[in-house]
Length: 328
Image 1 (cartoon, rainbow, N blue to C red):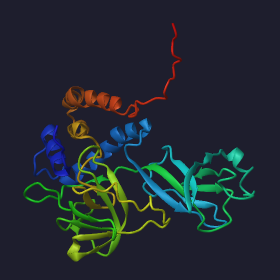
Image 2: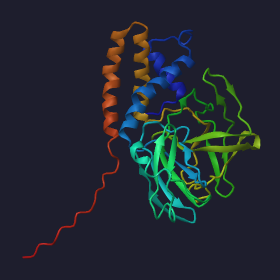
Image 3: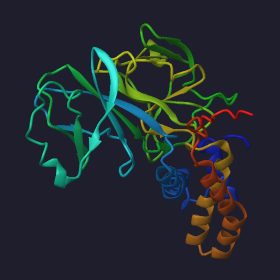
Image 4: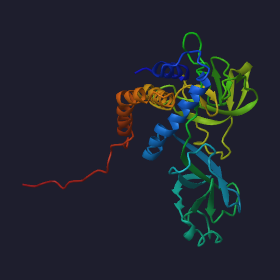
């Protein structure tokens, strides 16, 4: 099954929902809005509930003396399991942080560490969109918290491609020393109404893997130079080598302005059913419920069932079982 980018998804929706290209009630921008809604309602919900880490990113937070409250990553999917560990900066050995309830938090909120949060295991509680360290550390720059979180799906936009079909913004060179990426063409910042502008200066970007789950591999700040063809990635504030490792990025990945993508973050097998589910939603709104039901039963429902199976635990390994030898 071939990958469908944003433009191809819109074409598929038009064909399945019998929408003419010039229909003013269903412009490309409106269809993309429906595509993104269905992506969230059907697929994102399934991925979040399965909690198998397919959209996982990692955030590093340097701890500050006497600071209790720290913000969760801005694009983290709320309601998901966020795994957090703490480490000393000079000796990276991650220790899990215990999640507390509000009832238990009061026991630790105003105490202090006798030596370090590693010797006395750190505890934390999620309050709204912040996490609170209980109790706070007493020194700045000594410890870092690592948060594994699930990134919210980016907004699907019309594709940015050359005539050959190659995505604009494809990475052609990576310099790990300078953290500079070279891309094959100048990308655009795409507004929700479809209008575009040229990004400049320092901005938040995503680096997307084209293939597999079409997921965000890296996100963060970057500075544009070289006529829009060079992106220098900002270093992580924690200073940890693993936080600044660029091995998740590969030649052929694509740069986009943050929270924008040409592809649904799904395996290619499910791009068609995303378009068909969107078409069914539109058909229902247009009073063609029978056709919507036929389309859903023929294509969408079977694919959603397969998708659920795909999200089962991806690691089939288990603990070794040692069996005593038998003697005659």
